[in-house]
Amino acid sequence: MLKVDQLSISINEKNIVEDSSFLVPRGKITSIIGESGSGKSMTVAALLGNLPLGTETTGKALFDGKDLMDSSTEEIMGIRKTDIFTIFQDAANSFNPSVKMERQLYAFSGGRNGDTVKQFRAKMSSILVELGLSVAIFHQYPFELSGGMLQRCMIACALYVKPNLLIADEPTSSLDRVVQKEFIDILKVLNEKQGTTTLLITHDLDIVAEAADEMIVMHAGKVVETGSVAELFARPTHPYTKRLLESRF
Amino acid sequence: MSVKWFGKRMVMGTIVLLVISFLSFFIMHLAPGDPATAFYGGNAQTLNTAEKERISRAFSLDRPVIEQYGLWLKEILQGNLGYSSKEGRPVTVILLERLPNTLLLFGVTLFFIIIGSLWLGTVAGMQKGSLWDKGLSTISIATSSIPSFWLGILFISFFSVKLGILPSSGTGEVGGDGGILDKLRHLIMPAAVIILTHTGIYARFLQESIKAETSKYYVMVAKANGVLEREIRKGVLRNASIPYLNYIGMTIPSFFGGSIIVESLFSWAGLGQLLVKAVMMKDFPLIMGGILFTGLLVVFSLFIIDLVMYAVDPKLRKGAYSR
Image (cartoon, rainbow over all chains, first blue to last red; front, side, top):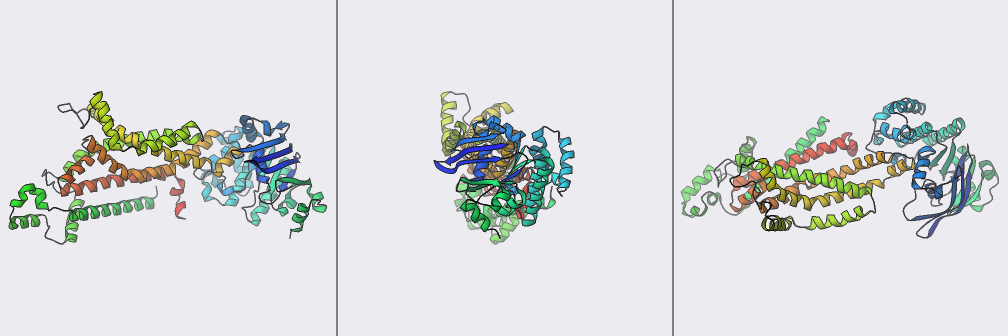
């Protein structure tokens, strides 16, 4: 599905990510793990064409054969709209505070697909109920909902649009343990039922162990090890991966 | 609308007016000169002590200051602002004569300032790094640095003296029909001076507000997920308009202050010009009434801005700021 080849990202001639290569296989949950500053989120930003001004990139990122690094802004925008859905870390700030949830959820889901508001209401209502949310949130503003509820709203949109690739960038770090568990369960259901290919970025090894099939270990801007979760947990080769595994409780 | 919010605004507005009345009364009380002089001008010297005492008694000036203030306030609440010591007519009548002119100048200038700054600020703010963006940043500083009285003099010199196409002063032709077209012709220059010296800085404020808003997290999330650009812009503008409206609200009082200069320069027969004349002539009742009237206008304008903010900002409606 996604093949990243020799990706390097630099800001003001300082390398943030260096020669990273990895594969995100179709229909699986692949996790990028690494500590803060290891270049995980920058890699995601590069894939989404969302890098800050003055950033330079080299290498390739083939998404279904199309090089994301070599695409025009319009092409990237098209891919963002039709193929990829991204859930970010800070759910509380992921929505516009002065627009009602219905309008925003529509923009994130039905609006992307070209559905009418009526179609959207019917479909989204059942998804919200499935996720344990009331349809009353349609008429509420983001600041009236909790971080966990807002993150579930984002998942609701992902369930709605059924993207080819779901990217979740540290989606659970601002949530408490119980909500984290719920979130991971939903990701797994989404993957099992709809076969959604997922790229899960995290610094939490427990989440990797719980949810992911494949893992990519990043350290200081480099991909140091890749492989299946079972394999890497059993036989880590890179010293950083070993240290990471040893640090688990 | 929340009754509690409405009530709170009304109470706050009343307190502001009370403070204004208190200040205007006591500042006038401390001002040099005495009321007898104000009434009789140079002839006051010819008054004997008994006559001066009679004047003091007539105006309750022989009572303690606080009592004088109380009596004054009581009369004001009944709509009586006293009599002008120069014209001998009720202050309320004189002020009401001038009010339409001030409202016209204020309304027209504020309308064009808002339209102009909304347009310039949005275009510049939405195109970060563009020529519009950089241009507005520079021009706004230049235009807001120009003193309005100086620009006014330039205008008079150019449009009235040199070209002779616009009247240099007044609100209508002497002997004219006093029609709206005549008034508008007289309005062009004073309004243009205020608009030109204010639009830039309001536009700059909105531009910065939009730029700050477009770098917010939710915009990044929406863009990354292919939300329509039009939808994102709408949301950004709505949020950016909240600090902009706040800024307009905060600057309305100084707006009235600034218009005093412009009204005097162009002899625009509004409240500002009236106040300046009243100060020159030590017409105490008129000054106090004028200050109070201007205060009332400011409080009312702020109330309108508050209502707009209430409509635009859901956090205000839902009381999220006080949580």
